Image (cartoon, rainbow, N blue to C red; front, side):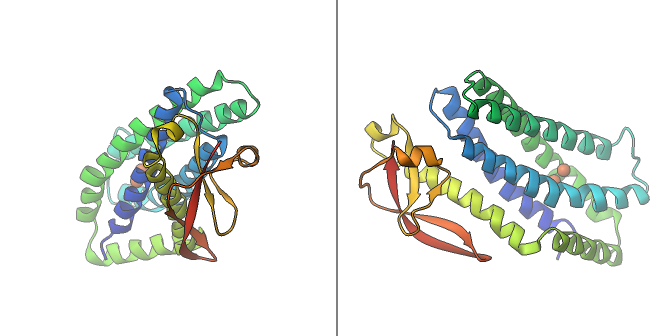
Amino acid sequence: MTLTGDLVEEHKLIKRMIDMLESFAKKLEEGQIVEPIIFEQATDFIRNFADRFHHAKEEDILFKEMVKKGMPEKDSPIEVMLIEHEQGRDFVKGIIRANEQLKRGDKRAIKEIIRNAKGYIELLREHIEKENDILYPLAERMFTQEEQKELYHKFKEAETKKGGELTVKKYEGIVISFEMSEIANRNLPASARSKRAMLRSKASGTAIAVSEHAQKHATCFSTGSVFDTKLNGGELKSQKIELIRV
Ligand SMILES: [Fe+2]
Ligand SMILES: [Fe+2]
């Protein structure tokens, strides 16, 4: 156990989602269609995992304890981190707002989704680097072993209040299904890639990040199989999926 070990692990998952967000924004820039549900799932991850689960531990526990230990609140790395958390929240609000606009058919919103997604990606990548390389190592040096243990328990308590391991698994499941979709999409023949490549679960019939409208208009074709890993009753389960295109 290290004080900030779990936070660093959470950063890894957040960075994987940021990579996916970058890929979705790039697709929009290239004129491809990205279903609104994709951005709904991505912003759900950011709000509930990156922000409520992860940033909350930093804001409510770690940073406060660092201030108690003598780190200034103003004109300090902590102030910068808190400002960046707020900037991140604004970018996410921007994505959600524009995505709703797009759902109502306003294509001008695409630019706003791209702008806010890019802003968030750049901000968070740098933010995570600063925490991993500067702030967390500093925190590890500020507290005694005893204090670190106490803080670690506070982290665990905070996690439990926010769903604990189930929450981690749920959001890990979203990242994995995005990654699987990306891999499957890359393996599609060029003719299919030029249209919209979607994924649908063969076993359950439910769509993965595909709107109902898209499903209704989908036609099936065979391209082999990949695996869809999803959260199922708290357990991550894998099942074969087939590819469909519209
Ligand atoms: Fe942070
Ligand atoms: Fe962080």
